Structures are given as structure tokens and as C-alpha cells.
Image 1 (cartoon, rainbow over the protein chains, first blue to last red):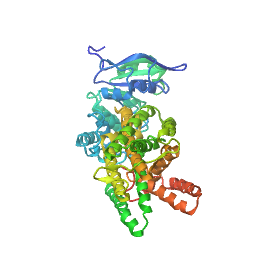
Image 2: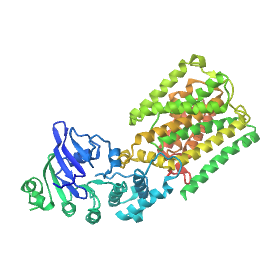
Image 3: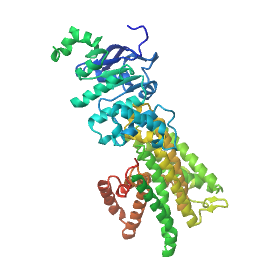
Length: 252
Length: 314
């Protein structure tokens, strides 16, 4: 494909749960700077695939190479430190911390040792200031001091993305960032993700087809654990196999 | 605002504790000196458990182990004629930390009910080890040969100086825990309790943070043990009995988990209630049980949650 090596190279990845082949010989390349969407009907194995990319699940066979390094066996914290950051489909924030605390902690994870036992972390400007900047960027600047538990659902989704950004990732794994959002909120997130395009490399797993076609440079279609097609949005729209397997119902 | 109310509460409690010796002397009731010193020693033990239980989410059901190790360190050294406080307390701290390192390194690989059971099992092992130490009294225990002495400074045989020594240590450890839980380290520990999957996803490996907290808590409780053997002047394996672990845990829950003052309030409430009920009836535990159930049901944040500014340490 491209001349330069891809940032993420997934090679013949397989994972079975009993007789169910949830991931079946998946091969996938994500180039630096691109927004790569993974779509597929319910039960296609998107969550299983994300789990393996983030390190929460171990594949039965196959390899994952990230920035030229085999990370197949690395645990999630080590992948995060190498620059692979994920968001969760079901909102996963620190509910009893403020929005700013949440983001500052993600900054802290990537700025030196946390075996520091004395100085108050909440007065550490090297953590608070970058965290504030990121909250402003995702549009939560005015909600910095609100407990995450008290944020609206859409705001919690924004906080998820803020925490991903705060780890200064080389690749963002966004697992249904628009899940459970209203139309207005989700359009705001699409615009925001659009503003990150080019500056960040993203894998976007999403149900919202309008969002996928608006954002993605390339799309991979997953059906029954297999990638049936990869291409530009236009190619995917035109692909007869994809249309019959997936898009047939709502795109005519 | 909340933070300053909390600080005021802590200073009020410490000032009240500082007033106990003169008041007890005035009332001609030296017994209160003994009771409140005991409360403060258990407050230290509960404070240390709160670090891992309240802030770290590690339900250790074997915290009395470190009370025992601290106690045995002092008792055994005293038995062999070594009474120097710096050495005794140094050994108590190092031994407790070392044992906590071993127990923690294994236990923290498990979670949930397995963690509870494995910490209990380790403490039972130490309990039976204590019983088997015939030279040091075995099952019956032994008298503390002599109280700890800090040459030229302090002899823990003297009730009032001993009382203030415990108070100073309690105050110092309260400040230490306050700094710890607000530091980078403490925030990671609390975040892991709140949401471990997220903590891993942003790049922390929680194991070492939990282990470090476990060791610090063990060392702190070792200090409580060294003080406790001076309090009782008698050393027995019962220091490490599982019911004692349960009592310390109850003090933390009763007082308010993940609050700074909670363990102090919990220790005071439990021991004062025990003392009061004992004076009424020998079946005092029949009354204590339901009272504790009611407190847990109706004061979910513990006693600290009922005080101004005494809510969670945010």
C-alpha cells in the first residue's frame, strides 16, 4: 500500500471462544495520520478485536505490531506507555474525582514517576495546566471542577476522549465514542474528532454510519470475525459484498 | 471550605486528646489515661488499615499481624535485655514492613474474596507461630520484661509521658497519611480503587502502587504494635488473633473509610462503647452487635460523615 511502514500492523489475528471464531484471521494496517473506522453488524467481533488491540484480551494466534515493535503480549499499561490509548464503549471514568482530576491523572501517567509520596498532586501545575488545556479543547473547560459522576452522559463521553488525549497517544482506539449520545451531542463530537484528524491517528469503532462516513479516511468492514473489505468510504459504499452483508438495509 | 472544616475537626480531636491527662488527674480517674492511650494506639492501627482499605480498596482481613510483629519485636528484644526505644521501634518497623512485603507480594496478585482469605490465612500462620514460640511464652504469652526506654528522653513506664508520646505519633502519622493520599502516589492508589481497568488503560501498573501502600501500612501498624505491648505490658499471640483484625477493620468502617479522622473516631467509638457496656453487663457484646449494625446501616459514610467537613477526602 503506502511506502512507509504502517503505525499499526495486525497480522492474521485469531481469537475463538469455544466454537465461536470471534476474530478470524484479521489482517489490518493503520497508517500514521489516518482515521481508520471499523464497522460491522452486532456480533461481528468489534469489541473482541478492540480488546486484543488494547491488550485486555490475548489472541490465540497472530501478531500485533505497533511502531515497528511486536506488542502482542504486552499488558494494557505497557501499551498505553508506548502511545496506544483507548476509550471505553461503556463510560469508564473516575466517578468520585472531578473532571480535571480525571484528566490530570492521565497526564500524570505519562509524565515521570508516580512514586512520589509527599507533594500534593492537585497543586502540581505541570499536571493541572495541560489537563485544563485538554478540557478546554474537548469543550469541558467550564465543567473542570464538577465530579465526573455529576456530568451529563454526553459530557462523560467527552471526558473519555479527553483522558485519551491526555496520554499524548500516537494511536487512539475509540470504542463507540458516540454511544448513547443524542443527535446534537454526537454531531459536536463528530466535529471535534474531525478537528483532530490528520494530527492524530485514530481507530474508530462506531455504529453511527453518518459519523463513520464523515470522519474515516478508510473503513474496514468486519463480519463474523472476518474483514470482508477495506477501502475508502466511496469504495466501501460501492462494494457489493459489503452492501449485501451490512449496508443493504439502510443504504440503498 | 470543606477542607478547612476537616482540618478544624482534626485539631479539635487532637486538642481533646491532649486534654485527657490533666482532666483525668483532676477527676482522680487515672483509668481514663489508660483507656484513651489504648484508643490512640488502636487509632494508629486503624489509620494504617484505612490507607489500604479505605484509600486502596484492599480488604485486608489480617491487619492484626503487624500489631503482633511490632509487639513481638519489642517483647523479644526486651526479653533479651535490649530496652532501647530507637532500636526496638526500628526493628518493629523494619520487621513489619518486611513481612508486609512478603504477604502483600503474594496477596495483591489476588482480589476480592481471595484477597480477604489469603491475608487472613497469613495472619493465622503468624498467630500459630506465636503459639509455638515456647521461649517467649507460647500460648500463654509473657510479661514485657521492661518498658521501652528512649535514653535520656522518655521511659514508657511513666503513664503521662507515654500518653503524650502516643499522641505525638498519632498526630505525625495523621499528617503523613494526609500527605500520602494527596501525593501523586496516593492519587494513583485511590484511582485504582475507584476504577482499576481505567487506571491500567491510562498507563499505570497498579500492582507496585498497591504493594507500596501495603508495606507502608504494615510498617505503621508495627509502630502501633510496639506501643501496644508497652500499654498491656504483656505479650501474647492474641495480638494477632483474627478477631482483633476484625476489630481494627470495624473501627475503619465505623469511623468512615477514606477519611483522615475516621479511624480515630472509629477506634474511640468502639472502645468507649465497649467500656461503657462492660460496666453494665457481662453480655455486652449482645448490645454492641446491634448498635454496630445500626451505625453501618444508617451512617454509610461512618462517623466522620456526620461531622462538618468530615466527608470523603477529595
